[in-house]
Image (cartoon, rainbow, N blue to C red; front, side, top):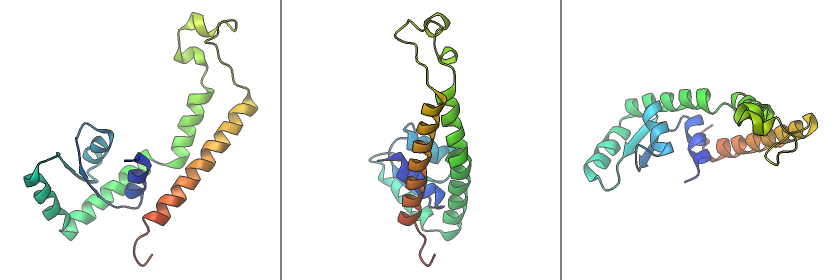
Length: 144
């Protein structure tokens, strides 16, 4: 499954019932946020229990709120673009061995112009907005 779909579900305050492992990235998101249910594969008892909880409107509301809160704190576009900008503008010397990155003759040395960095940020931001829009359309609440 594509993580961005689940990010859209969380952003739309939709709790997720996931059949998979708690140690997977999605399993960790759901467990950490409380924004849904993680059911181990082939555990019918756990699946029945999760479905029973999911049918309770109060439980769904609580998990929906948790999912939305997690999405706003972890999948916020402005925060993620700033983190991305930091990662691509960070001097390579901070990310690699000092002697390899300070020497421009070293093939491992990489340098990006400010214009190149701005172009990559613009492209990344545009793609992020497209994904957000797709998620909103896909997970639009009935009557919204």
